[in-house]
Length: 206
Image (cartoon, helix red, strand yellow):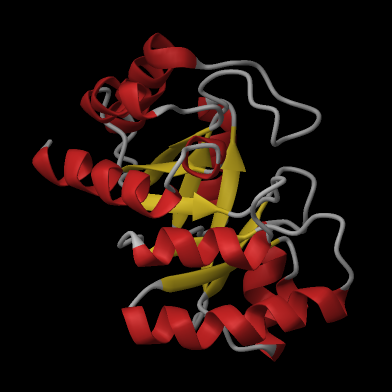
């Protein structure tokens, strides 16, 4: 599974980057617009929601729980400093996907107890797209945490996130992750659509 997380570059805005990933076959878009006001987010969703529906892709909103239900998109991703997932679930119900961010096995146990649908575990390495970065995990860290999850009977899908490059994908997936989340690796490439396509082919062949 590939999740594309939006950000802006000199070449691409939030929507343009997401469209490039969708055109490359990505089926999971997280619209992350940390500094944007609700009106800007609504405009972006108005453009992306029909495209995601047309392509059979999931559209998640980062952080904004109330907007997720107001705009009736697929779900929301909650960072460690956002609303607790259990509170979000009480607010918007079972209809929506709720994901959470983890940096440790203890974080994962907490998120699973709150009923998240998937977990973003990172950062894999340093990434410029996120401020206030948690401790770097790396391949050995992933192996260790996934091993602890298996021992604890945790089956919630776990997605690797944070500074991942295409060359890292095979090792990450062999460490037992359910998928990867990318942003910069796609948008910095010469052809984001073609890069997305190649990454999905790599994932499908593992």
